[in-house]
Amino acid sequence: MDTTMRKYMEAFGFASPRQVSCEICGHPAAMIHHIRGTAGSLRTRPDNMIAVCRHCNLEIRAGQLKPEFLKRKHTRFAQFRALLNRVR
Ligand SMILES: [Zn+2]
Image 1: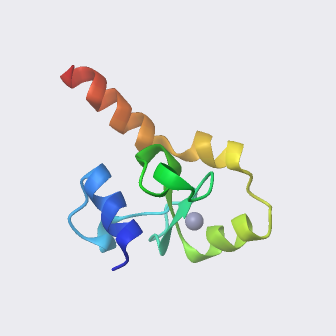
Image 2: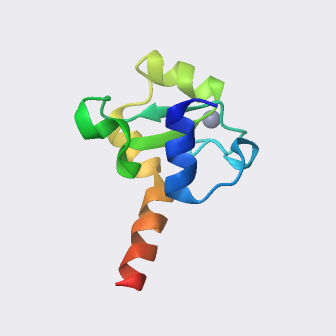
């Protein structure tokens, strides 16, 4: 398992990479995509890491899925933020 997947699982409370689904289509996730690149802290920020399957990753690479769309699709982060607000 790569470091990015491990960081993603830590951030969102997954015990196994097999539990992680693509946040765009729901199929099993193959990798973690960095929505706005990997400069500095962006590499490990939960708001910048979206789980994607191979097919959706290809669409991202082809430029068919834009960062703004991915940010809206990153609902796992919205749930994470809601949870944090409840704890505060
Ligand atoms: Zn997908």
